[in-house]
Amino acid sequence: MSRSTLRVASLVVAAAAMVAVATPAHAFRMIQNTSVGRFSAGFAVTCSNSVGFVHWNTRSINWWHNTANQGSGKGTALSAAMSAWTGVSSANHVLSYAGTTSAGWSTDGRNTILWASGNGCTGNCLALTALVLQSGQVLVESDITFNNSVSWTTSGSQFDTQAVAAHELGHALGIHHTNLTSTPRPTMYASYFGSGGRSLESDDRAALQCAESRY
Amino acid sequence: MQAGPKWRCAVAAGAAGVALALAVAVPAGATTLRRAGLEALVADNHTVVVGEVLDAHSYWNADNTFILTDVRVEVADVLKGEAPAVMTVTVMGGTVGDLTTLIVGGPELFPGRSYVLFVGHADLPGAARANTVRDLAQGVFDLRAEGGVVRAVSQASEMPLVPDFFGQAEPPGGVRGLELASMVRTVRELAHVRTQGEDLK
View 1 (tube, rainbow over the protein chains, first blue to last red):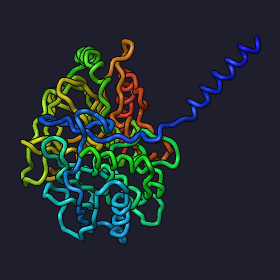
View 2 (cartoon, helix red, strand yellow):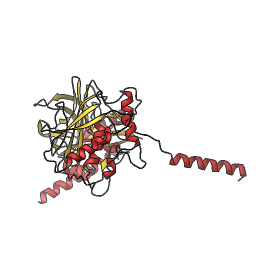
View 3 (cartoon, rainbow over the protein chains, first blue to last red):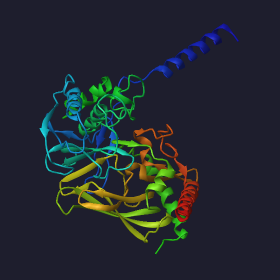
């Protein structure tokens, strides 16, 4: 093999290696509702999608906590999960723990987090998020139900309440799962990975900043 | 009345026809679900069918507290249990007027498309022990044509699954899915084994 051929070959190998290790800085996706008039669970789209995505028209989002069936200490974990999203810079969304409620899994204008064994979340369902939308893409309410037949902890062991709450609250903000697979894993990574999900990563923050800048 | 296997070819042809349309849509998956293998899906649901969605009707439940949707499915093949020629499955969410309730991680059921559906009882808001897709996205397999073969792809293939007790986190068949014919055989066998097991008790 000639020297020039070797040089070209080594350049190609080097370039391929760079491509192989390169990961996009951000790979978050947003939830798009295309279901007006029919039944759907929504779709994953990029921030620049021309149809848009589900979003709040208000920045102040109060969450109520139904403490029935929950075990102990969950309020602190929920507040911490909310604080993570509130703390995102260049995004003015404020998620607040508004107190306790007896409200359930219902469309009542109140964002509620609760523990139950029904609500369509049973068996292998650990937690479920419902989004209530007006005019197609405008979020007006969200409820999160945790399956109380599962063991929920606040210690970081499986299943970690704060990590799952942070993930579900991300969905309630209109954020879908990220395509990013590198570590540290974003909270919106497409799998439960323990208490590491408590803290937001750059990709998570960029998703909320995207919603902030677009709406 | 049970629908007969004569419908299988029609389902396969229909699936081939909609394959391109299916390819452009990436269903949303979210929520937190623990992975359920085929064995668990068969065990936990009383009925498994292959069928085409005819239509969907959304409405407020009796308490006016939640939007539900009745989905009518023309049954092509019954793999477990019994089903009428047209069965109705109730799911959470839907659109009534200007308001939509979207269940993140719920099943996507579009009129005119065919699926393998795992149907069981679950308590929905205002509908106790409803006939529903209790395993949400894990309980629905899209039918897609690939190289002349119809494959069944779990709607959970694009969503987070908590690993099951065996450490597996991928739904049956993964993103490529299972050959429909093979899946049908497996589900029938699993259902048969369960029936025999129950007889022995």
